[in-house]
Image (tube, rainbow, N blue to C red; front, side, top):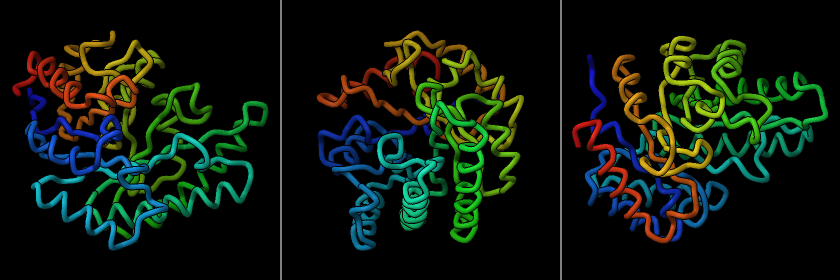
Length: 278
C-alpha cells in the first residue's frame, strides 16, 4: 500500500500573515518543506496590488530557497469576490480577478489555481446562482486552458456557500462544466461538516480530485493537528489506501496561530510524525 510521504505535506502562509513573506519562506526551509501553497492576500501578495515585476521578484525569492509553489490561492472568501454574484458588475469583477490570478499563477510556476463557487442569495432560486457560477467557471476554464494550468474547485462549508459544499455538489459542477482544466479538491473541514470522508469523495470523483487542504477541526475551524477532533489516523489510512499522491496543505486560518506561527508548524510535524515518516 502506498504511503503518504513527508514531501506531500505542504506549507501555507495564511497564519504567517503578521510576519513578512520572507519570514514565511525562510520558515518553510527551516522546517524542511519542499512545496508551498501561496495564499494571495495583503500584506504578502494581493493580486490587485502586484505588478509583473512584483510577481517575478517573489518568484525569485521562492526559487532562491529551492521551494516550489504547488497551488496559488488568491483570497476569495470575503468581500468582494463572488463568482455567483447576482449583480453583474460584481460577478464580472470577480471573473477578472481570477483571470489576473491565473496569469500570476503561471508566472509563479504554480500548476494549480484554487477557485471557489461563491454563493447565491438564500432567498433566490439556487439554480439561478448555480448557473452564474457555472458560466463563470466555463469562462475561467478556457483561460486556464490557454495558460496550461488547472483550476481546482474547493467546496466550502454550508455556512459559507449554498452552492458547492459536499462531494455530490462538487461532482455535479465538474460534470456540467466538463473541462479537463477544472478539477476538484477537498478541504477536511467542509468534508467533516458534511459527514463525509476521503472514501466518499474519491469513490465519486476518482482522478478528478487532485488537491487537499489537510487540517484539524472541532469540527469547524482550521486547527493544527492534535487540537481538534478529526480522525488523523483514519484519514492517513484512507489516503494511503486510495494511493493519493498530491499535496496536503496545512491551511491554518484560525487567528490563534498568527502570533507564533512557527509553533503551529512544530506541533503539526510532531503530531504527524506518529502517522507518517517525518
